[in-house]
Length: 368
Image (cartoon, rainbow, N blue to C red; front, side, top):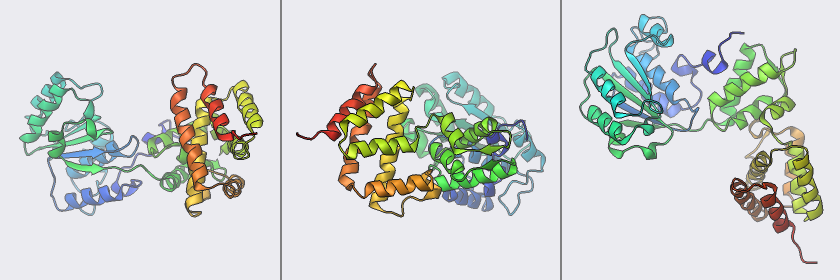
């Protein structure tokens, strides 16, 4: 196995290797084939959804000396190799989180005056561009209003609403979607096979589920699980739960049973047992909310959840299906709303179990 972390080792080097974002890939590759390149692009979307990866691919493709099929970087010419090795002097990457001031943008504006040294275009990738100061953003705007023909800007942000509207209006905007569990799982299976790693059924989907749509987070977690796994190199569901601090689904399911059956005493006892055993109650409530959401989706449509996208074992999924037969959508909805409120209130209290105890009393109360 290489010493490179997985997210760097398996970073896509061509458009066909990218997971998801098909609508964006198609538009960008068509623009390359038709030589219809804009001077500024804005990539918006959640972290880990592929914004900077696709920005680098696009930069590599438009400067490639011998593109394959008219749009794919060849990964063999000097331009491609220099970008892959982070040595290209015509590709400038700026992290606006740490280079957000007016002086940084002034330096950029000075650099943009010079033509590219080796390539067709001089490309500027500005990550987290919403973090630029007001003066820096206005200075960047002036550059975007009258850019030289050799310059292309690729802006990436997780919070486009924080950007000044005049910058947004001068860019072609692309909205990246959160990656779906099956998409992430499929790529994780590919990586695991390449790394000669075995895994239990539903282990990789559990990793994908907890990545919350971020492929980079999924790869980092897989890396962690590989290092944690036993000498036989088998990734186990139990180990993933240990690493993530996930509360067992059986505990969550049992707790919901107590609430449904209005068994106040057992629900309070279960909560206190978890507290005494060192369970992170924030994580418990977060997992409970996720479990209730899955239950609601299953109640609405039995086809919404399966073994591939739920992160549940067959036994856990069967238990959930049985459990919701005694519940209405309104019942589950009420529990969800109460525990979402609990999660918010826990952040401000020194006694985190108190909001959970009050929620138990609220849900199990019945007049004697």
